[in-house]
Image 1 (cartoon, one colour):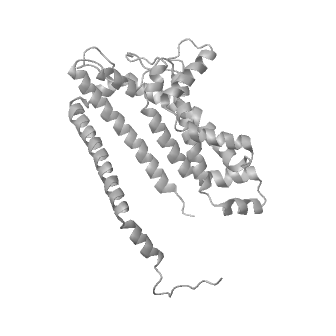
Image 2: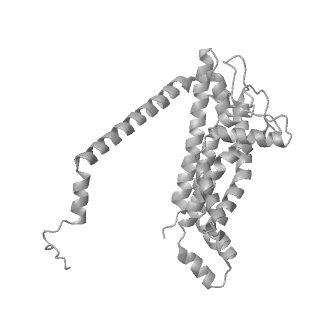
Length: 301
């Protein structure tokens, strides 16, 4: 049975159908609701940030960085928390980045996509990226207990909890960066006599470095703001010493902020606001570095 096509001038174009769909009542109503939700969320966020800045500006001084916590809010500072955050994040990066990149490289470049076990691993990695952070604190607590570690409030313990938290994120972001590298580069490298391993390490992985760096920095910035897994490990809320090793006790900036906000004195609330501003500046700096790396080294294929 033959079908007759409508004359060219009477057939609605794809662009016309798309425009009609965008201007339909349902689409307009959904777009309005979307903008209203976005406006409400941004309004609350801006209000919270402005209020925090107003409350904490009076204590944004050198003492906040150089002084130790004290019962006197006028002399209290966040030096141990700042150094503890640096220690924990640095150890987390050393433990997690090589493992996450290696796992992503194996799953994306060498693993058999049709193998059921590999598909099971990929599915679980995706699911683990959405697990609440407190679950990773329980997992780290169990691991340290099995290893016979009595004092779990140590730098390596906190790094283990945060490493488990961001490992799935690093794996997923690294795989996405590897997928963005064109297949032609791999085929050209192999055609010139390179092995698959040489191609992966000399061509694919270097080309994916901007995406890997961006995802890794964003994952570390998420870990920097976490407090729940560390509190579950018994992290100290009052530390008057600097952490000096992997087995040293520690506190972090989110935990110190949590401690100050629980105090009844208004001066401690001001300290918490000032520390929140400092933490926000660090997070924004990390995100800015990620954006700069992406824009500076990103390649257009």
